Image (tube, rainbow, N blue to C red):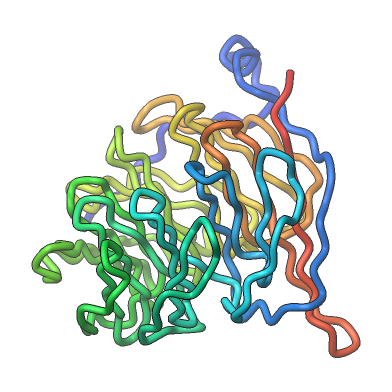
Length: 314
């Protein structure tokens, strides 16, 4: 049985971390955008397109992430989830609509899923809509290739080397490593000490560290052997979260606050900031390092999505 190893997790304000903290950006919330016209679907998530400078996931609205303004409305329901292939100029809504990232026009339809997440693999140029039957789409053509049974696939991330790491819905954290060419499960990791929560997953491709949500906190897992590196205590209410590969910061939005964690090394993580911010899903723009948070609310039969923006400063 593997043993849980706790490496240095230092809370904000620790004297030994002041030098490193000074070099990191300090975030503050600036503005918000509200949408009451769309059906967001269960557990909506945000997707940023750093190439075309757009943000998707606030209902059917398209947001310009340079000006932080709504610039268009999609003509179809996206159910609050989009998989983007900027290098191919195509997007895929989890309802199954394939669309053009420049014109937003629908160019095709595939089997969709309004329940779980999706992921794009830049090596094979395939998009995956994850569910009990995962839909595989060739984003060079926008055509569905197949549906494959990967188990109760929920959320996933691509490592940029032709593999997906997908969390499978179980009581404890279970990870499958999928070859994006053969579509075969090559490895299966069961991670002890983590009572899995339904929600997102992200990765530092450089250090080969996976980040998963657990009831106990944020699990850091070695992608090459499935070992649990450490568990970072964070609020539990996040649907999805994100990692900035430039600043090495992880952003988790839950319980009325944005928690910012710095990866100081493959085995060392430090909470550097917590600021008031409401929502359950977060994504970061790797160019400006702005963080976008989505808050989903139901009141008086109305479905409201609120996009809040936090920007870095000193």
